[in-house]
Length: 356
Ligand SMILES: O=C[C@H](O)[C@H](O)COP(=O)(O)O
Ligand SMILES: C=C(OP(=O)(O)O)C(=O)O
Image (cartoon, rainbow, N blue to C red; front, top):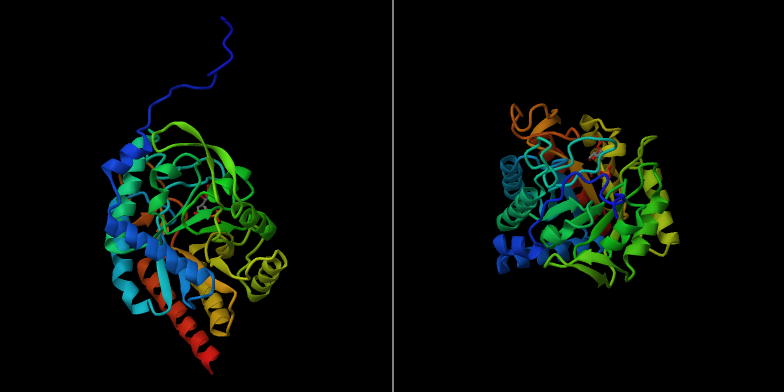
């Protein structure tokens, strides 16, 4: 056959190490595994209403610099004992970014931030950082965007997200049915909460679909379904949905769909109109709802880094300000501590109200 009908748009194909090889190079020991299992159990208890604390997923929009990510993790670890009567702090350790159009795709896809796309090196960075978080005693959360990469690192997560751009994707919904960690489903970018509720229903079921094995072979897996799917309200381009009326509408939709009326609220994205400086005001409004007794709100998400704001990637890693986001703008560390303290106070107030 001389007419070329395949690989017309393929420029290059490079091997990736087998997932098992990377796991062997950077293994999770018994201590890390026990920590991750305990953090997932604590998360589940909050989602199911067996623990009245708030699940707070807080940290950078994306990880681009292993050093500042680990400094952030160490600070969170030092802060946690002061708040852990009221908050379970889980760090955002996001390695894969879904872009609206084009843009840097995250540390796994492009670890040098220069477009070279050394995905093997990116996966090693991801495992190393997640293992270090577990050693420090910091539970980790990440959006799972790619359908192949989870085999390389997802066992190290305490919480996973299916984002607003992929929540309607049947492939992401069935992939979520295989994940070992609880998974939050964001409302769609157009604001549809129904899309996330559908996704929770799909992910709790068993599915059979093609995947890759730890040996890197094409396989078909059968899942048992993920029982810990839940809704994350993140607002939309035409407005937020963190206010009490939106929360009560979302809780009613969950109940009508036969699901527990418990949800997480993202203070960033559509809920801050993509203005990072609004996140503390959004969190304050949610704190007020919690202090007044709202039992639907069981968690929050906050985009936060060591340094507030964001910066553009101009020349790979050259010239970047340490500890500042290269994707969405984040609140800085001091503002983050103040928000977390306010949230902890709101939980204590809700608890006191429930006892009275
Ligand atoms: O949180 C991350 C961003 O909001 C998401 O990746 C989309 O980013 P973009 O609109 O800048 O591409
Ligand atoms: C991309 C993200 O969020 P969303 O899917 O809500 O846009 C994110 O949390 O990084």
